[in-house]
Amino acid sequence: MFSLVRENIRIAFDSIKSQLLRTILTIIIIAIGILALVCILSAVSALQNTISSDFSSMGANTFNIQRYEFNTQRRGDDAQKINPVINYRQVKQFKDTYNFPFTKTSISFLGTRAAEVKYENEKTDPEVQVYGVNENYITNSGLELELGRSLNYFDVENSNSVCVIGSDLRKALLNDVNPLDKTISIRGAKFKVIGVLKEKGSTFGNNQDLRVLMPLQKARTIFTNPNINYSLSVKADKKDMLEGAQDDAILLFRNIRGLNPIEENNFGIERSDDLINRVGEMTSILNKIAWVIGIITIFGSTIALLNMMLVSVSERTREIGVRKALGAKRKTIAYQFLIETIIISQLGGFFGILFGILAGWGISAGLGFKFTTPWFAMISAVVITFIVAIISGLMPAVKAAKLDPVESLRYE
Image 1 (cartoon, rainbow, N blue to C red):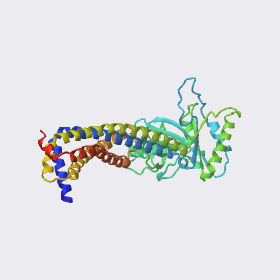
Image 2 (image 1 turned 180 degrees about the vertical axis):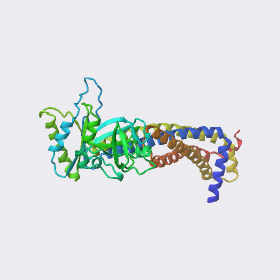
Image 3 (image 1 turned 120 degrees about the horizontal axis):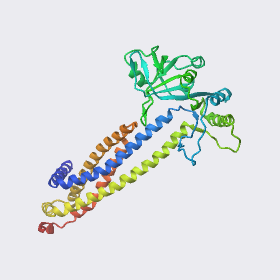
Image 4 (image 1 turned 90 degrees about the vertical axis):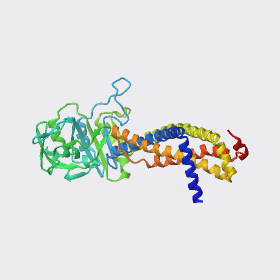
C-alpha cells in the first residue's frame, strides 16, 4: 500500500513537471485566494489584540468619566453636540463628594503630547506625553511598575517634584544608569524619578511608553491652559458593585454639571468591559468580510484547478489507456489524479499561508498593531485547500477512471 502511494505521488510530480507553466499559474491563483484570507484574518486579529489590550489597560472593574463617549467624534458642525470641558473644579468636587463604598477615584489630565525631556546633556525629541495624575491613577489604569514606587497621596497634596516614567523614556535617557532618584527636566522644572512603568507598547502609532506621570497639583503649575480637560476613573473593589457605583457616579456628576432631570448627559462614561465587547462586535464584522472575500477568491481558484485537471485528463487520455492496458485498476487511476490535485492545492495553500502571514505582519507593523501567529487562519487555509482539492479533483478523477482503455489507446 505504501509503495502504491509513493508511486502515485511520483507520477503526480512527473505530471506536474510536464505541464509546469499551467501548474504554476494554478498554484498562484490558489495562493492568492489563501493569501487574501490569511492576510485579512491576521490583520483583523492583530487589530483586535491591539484594541482589546489598549482598552483593558483601563483596569478591571473600572469606568471612566470623560468629555465624550468612546464612539463620539467631534466634527465641529451643528449635527454634533459639543460637550463642555470637564474642569478641575468639577473633578475635585466629584472626588471630595463621591463616597460609594469600596471604590477609588483617580483624576488625570494630559498636559502635552510634545514635551522635551532632558537629563544632564541628553534630551529626547519633543514627543513625550506628560500627564498630571493623582495617587490612584496607576492602579485604576491597570498599569504596573517595573522599578521603584508609585505616586502617593503626599506627593500629590504637597506638589512634590517627583515623577514616574515610561519604559521607552528610560531607554532614551537613563538606559545606562539606575533611573531611580535621577533628576530630569521638563519645561525647565526639575523632577526626581521615583518609578518606571512596565512596557505597554504602541496603539495606532501612539507610544504608551514614552510618557511622564507627575503629581496633579505640580502639573497644574506647569500646564496652565484654562481649557484643560480632566478625566475621572473609578475602580470598584468588587465587580458586583460596579453597576451601583456607576449609577451613583452618573447622578453625582450630573448634579455637578448642573443638569436638570430632562437634560441628556453632557459627558461620556465608559466601562472597560463595554469597550472590549464593542471592539469584539466591530472585529466580528471585519472577520465576516474577510471570509466573504476569501471564499469568493477561493471559489475562483477551485474553478481554475478543476479546469486544469479536466484539460490534463484530456491530454493524457492515451497515457491512461496504456496504464489500464497494463492492468491499472479504475481506483488506481482515480487515486493518481486525486493525489495530483491535492499536491497542487497544498502547494498553493503553502505559498498562500506564507505570503499571507508576511503581508499580515507587514500591515500590522505598519499600523502599530500587536501581531500574533494566526493559527486559526492557517488551519482554516489548510482545510480549505484540501476541500478545494477534493472538489476540483473528484470529477476529473472519476472521468479518468471511467475511460475505456481501447478507445483511450486510439486517442491522438
